Amino acid sequence: EPEVTQTPSHQVTQMGQEVILRCVPISNHLYFYWYRQILGQKVEFLVSFYNNEISEKSEIFDDQFSVERPDGSNFTLKIRSTKLEDSAMYFCASSEKRTGETGELFFGEGSRLTVL
Amino acid sequence: AQSVAQPEDQVNVAEGNPLTVKCTYSVSGNPYLFWYVQYPNRGLQFLLKYITGDNLVKGSYGFEAEFNKSQTSFHLKKPSALVSDSALYFCAVRDVTSGGYNKLIFGAGTRLAVHP
Image 1 (spheres, chains in turn green, orange):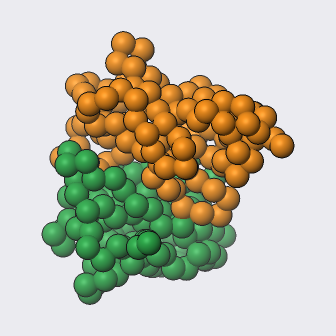
Image 2 (cartoon, chains in turn blue, green; image 1 turned 120 degrees about the vertical axis):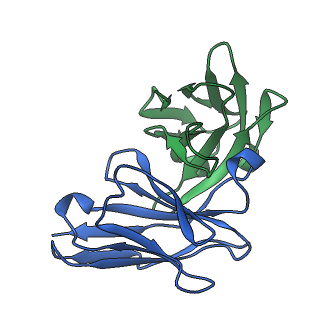
């Protein structure tokens, strides 16, 4: 069964460092997303990406965050200067269709980011 | 404001008994509703969705959910619980203010513990 894969599974970094989280969405999917879950809190939407551009982003997704699809398979989330409050589990997801066309999201297993 | 509420932090059920995990929503217009499950150290897995049609929706692993418009609820149910059903369950609703790019609003999650 096709699945979304994420690397690394866990990353520890120092505050102020740059981090890149990588995702390989399901191959025939067109829509890509990042969500995050701070420990003990809700899963929160960060950004959606379609046709090589951001289609929507939340207020969390400020200038320190960026996304990129550098080739035909990878989808990355970059955090430029990490802060303690960026510590969370980051989930990548992809979908074949929009929700309006009954497309559900398929999530990866997550990348746990710990900022010290 | 759009929201999803899962009133129970944890639900305890004996194996073989029926289970219900509650979810209520608040959204303008017709809701698109989803249930996801998260097993330990895994990503979110899609269980089922309600878009339109029959109020009783059947999903993966024997789960079903009933959409009740008058009570704005979408409770997850299973006739006979298994120990392997023990996991974290998330209800989600599509954010109708989004451009249809699958921005989901998640509930806080309910931990289901099924005891032998």
